[in-house]
Amino acid sequence: MAIRVPRIIKKSSTSLDVPKGHFVVYVGEQQKKRFVIPISYLSQPSFQDLLSQAEEEFGFNHPMGGITIPCREDIFIDITSQFRI
Image (cartoon, rainbow, N blue to C red; front, side):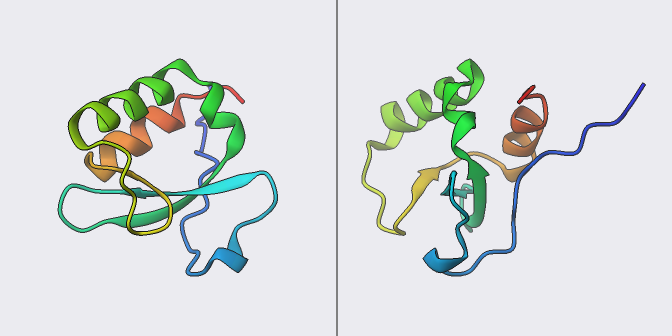
């Protein structure tokens, strides 16, 4: 049995650091952490559910310049680490 490491790129500070085929997501309830993730995550039902929940609670006002998902970082990593992409 292999352990699957999520394909999330965490250390990125500017829009120039976003590789082609990826986008920025800010995750956190109080302090937001910036993640650069593959666009292919958008096709995952669990990621779409997470985005829908964020939209219902907070709308789509993203002052940080990327999608903001107000959930705990460990929950976000747990969900995205299960993707089979």
